[in-house]
Every structure is written in C-alpha cells, then in structure tokens.
Amino acid sequence: MKKIIYTISLIAFVSLLFTECSEEFLNIKPIGKVNELSFFSDTANMDIAINGIYNAFEYKENLDVYDEFRMYMGSVASDEAECGGDTPTAWAEGYSYDELTYDPSASILEILYGAMFAGVSRASQVIEQLPEAKQLEGIDTVKVNVRLGEAHFLRAAFYFVLTRAFGGVPVVDHILLASEYNTIPRGTIKEVYTLMESDLKKAIKYLPLESEMSSGDKGRATKGSAQSLLAKMFVFEASYYTYYGTNDVRMGEVQDRWAEALYLCETVINSGEYELLGAGGETYETFWGPTTNGFRYLFSVEGNNNKESIFAIQHSLDQIGYNINRGTALNMFVGTRALYLDDAQTQMSSEGSHTWGFWAPTHKLYNMFHPDDVRRKVAIGEGPNPETGYKGDSIYCAPDGNEPGWYVIVPTRYPATGFEAFKYEIGPHLGSFQGLEWQANPQNQYYLRYADVVLLAAESAMMTNDQTKAKTYFNMIRERARNCGDGVNPADLSGDVTKKEIMDERSREFACEGERFFDLVRWHEAYNEINGTRMEWWDDSYNDLIYEEPKNDFFPLPSIDVSKNSSLNQYAGW
Image 1 (cartoon, helix red, strand yellow):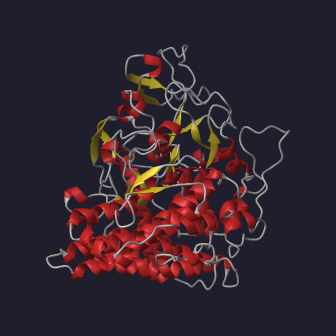
Image 2: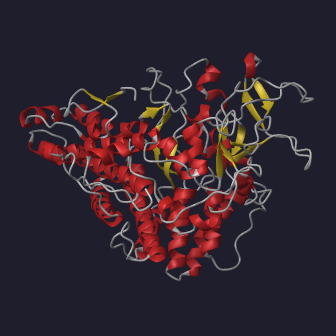
Image 3: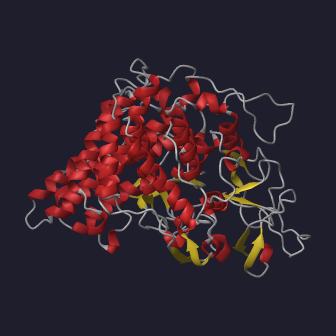
C-alpha cells in the first residue's frame, strides 16, 4: 500500500503515515499535557484537530474510501448495480463484490477498516483531551463544546460505517495503551451501538442547529446531523431485533427502538431546518439549465450543502496533488465511456473519452420506477433505445478534444447493463474536463440527507402501527418526486404502507447512493433478492449467484488485522 500523508492535529504529531497494517491507524501517541493545553489555547488549532478527524473519510485508494464503501459494498454487492468498466470484469476486486467472491484479503476491506479506525482513534484523542482546555484562561468554552460535539458525532459516524460493513467490531472509546493494540476483541453490534448512542446524545447536547452555523462552518456536523444518525442507528437496531431476534451472536442484545426512531425523525422534521428540495416545484440554476428541478439539483456541484443535506463528505477543487487533495475521484470512475459526436449518431468518441463506466445500474433497478418518475432520469442515464424510440440522454462534455457541448451518451459497449449512474454527472465541473487531475472533482457525497429521515419516519411509523403518519411521510417523498417531474407521477400511495412499499421506495429514492445492500441485510431480505439471480451480461456458461446466509450478511474482517489480533474472530463462513 502506498504511504499517504494526511494533515492531522498537532495533538498527536504533524502527520500520520498509513501503512499496510491497520494497527498503525490506531497508533497515535499522546503527548505532554502542558503542550496539549497550549495547543488548544489557539482556537484555530482546535479546528485543525477536528479537521483531522473529518479527513479520515477522504483517505484515497484511487477512490475515496467512503465512495468505495458505498459503490462496491453498498450497491454493487446488491441487486441494483454491476461493477462495470471497460469490460464487465475490468476491476477484479470490484467484480468480486458483484460475484460474491470477495475474501478477507480484499484491499478495499483493509482500507475501509483502517481508515475508519483512524477516524475513531483521532476522535477518541480529541474527546479525551479537549475538555481539559476549558481550564485555560480566556478559552472560548462555547467553541470547545461545539468541537467536542463534532468529535463525538464523527466517532459515531465512523462506527456506523464499520457496523454496516463488518457487523460487530472492536469498541474503542479511549486512547489505546500499547498493551491493548492486539488484544481488543470483537464487540457485538449492540455493544458498538451503545457507544454510538452515548456519543450521539453528547453531540446533540453540544452541536448547534444548521441555522446557527456560520457560512464558514457549513458542512460541519450539526445537532440535526447527530439526531438523524441516532434515528438511523435506532432503525437499524430495531430492524435487527425485528427480523433476526435476540439470539443472533452478531447482533447481541438488540432492542425494539422503532418508537425512539420515530420520535427523533419527527424532531428533525419539525425543526424546520431541512427541506425536500423541489417539493413545491421550485427550480434552481445549474449547468443543466436555469430551471433545474430540485431532485437533479441535489446531485449537482451547484447544490453542495443544500437544504436537504444533513451531513455530506465535503469535496473541493483544491489541486493539492495526487491522492491528498480534497476532491473526489468518483465522478471520473462513474459515467458513460463514449459519446455520439454527430446528430446522426454515426460517429462515436473513443472508449474512456469521458469517464470510465463503473457502477452500472441494473435493469431490475430501472424497472422499479414508473417511466415518468423524474428520479429514474436523475439516477440512470441511458442511450438511444430503438425499441422505445427514446433518443438518449445528453451530457455536457468535450470528448476526444471536441468542442464543449451536449453529446448523447452511447450505451455501454460492453454488456454490463448499458446504463450509467447519472447522479455523478457534473458537466463542466469535472476535473478532467478542465484539464485538471481526475481526483479533483468538487461534488460533495451524502452521508445523510433529509429524504432519508422522512422515509425512516414512514418506516418507523409503520412499525409502530401508525398508518396515518406512515402514509403522510411516505407520500412526502412521492410528492417531491412528482413536483420535480411531470406533476403526475409517482402518484401518492393510497393503501397501507407495507414493508415491500418501503423497500421499493427506498430503492427508488436512494438508487446508486450505497444504501441498498445494507437495507436488504437489515430487513433480512438479501438472500431473497440476490440468491439465484444472474449478472446481466452472464451467458449460460455461468452459474447463478450464491448468497450464503449468514456468511454474506457482513463482509469479513481484513485478514491482516485478524492475524495480528488473536482476540478477533471471523463470523461463521469466513
């Protein structure tokens, strides 16, 4: 693995080297108290410390680790997308998530585990040491509390990624002693959630509302971020309780948290801090046009830190250099590979002249939408279709050095699915379009958006037998989609909200955002939706996919970490 240097708080040391052993991610040595307090006497240094925690989401192995987590583990491993690329098996490891053949040596698993625990370790250090700064004369105690709230939120946010990916993981709530590095056992999901709940309740206490944030602090965690993540954690815990019971050793003593989840969701909804963009038919100016609908605006660079964004990984076009800039590479990985160069569609650009064609939506996902649901047009790009007469979607680009303009996409030449993940098409903001590095794209990537809270409220109300509330929140999502589109589709749900309706609506709303696989697992539906299916480009020489329960519910812990810690055990099947 390349050694990558992150900017990090001087509390620990000026920089942290990422090496091949995930143990090193946790190895942050505390320093003397006098220097520590002196460091925090400058509030700018406090920001440096917290920024070093946020930074763990942006660790890059080509793609940001958070984007690899969403694309390969949250989406490609499910039924909504194939790996894609210049051939269906272009990226061997990415393809292994498609085929369910990944193993504990997979680099993506190692990088995710290490980077998230780097964040946990940094947050733990700040949580332990920052409160002592309050004793300094003249210190801004309000700011200390806000930054402390961010550290608590971020530690929980890292752990939520870890538990969705791996299930139970070691619970680290303090600066580790040298003797602890290779001795901490794997906790249950409930044990991790107990720490998350404690952290998030402290974050709620300390963090400001979104409306109380200065413009310079936009993108940082807020009270709404902490409330929303705690609500989502409650939904996951309640789902495990409902669909797996209390005897599953992976989950531990999970509880019914549906009522608590609903209360928190409604707290966020009633706060007035967030909105579903375009719910009233509002339009916005973007490169797509001066009257871009609200759902499309959500996934534009112009829409970064919008009123629906509760927490997003921040990206900017700072061009610091390879693998340490704050841009994202996702937009270059995801998108159409070729464009038609003429109106007659007889001339095509070269392969890879625009982007690289990974994260290809499936026809199963495509067919879940009403044909006139605007969310399908925003989520899935398609080329000309002679069977339906559709003329194809256009994107703004400059393929093969041609003049910048609108070009119709060519259906993927290799038979992955023929579709493009359209939410990451950013036109002139694409770094390579501007002659800049392909990792430099400035589109923020969502961790939590308000629509998630609304649909979680609908699900929680359904599970607490309140169909009136469930239908109200469910139809808020459909109303926004309708008013961003043709004003007719999708129609409001007239009957009861059911588990199946929630499953399908979440698929439509969060298509190719990395939620699908983790939702299927919490609902105990992954086997039903994946086992026995086939990748779209497979012919009869391939066998159907085999989803093994409980093995494939969670990804294996990285083999390098298990080999160094005799207290870590893999789940059954690994």
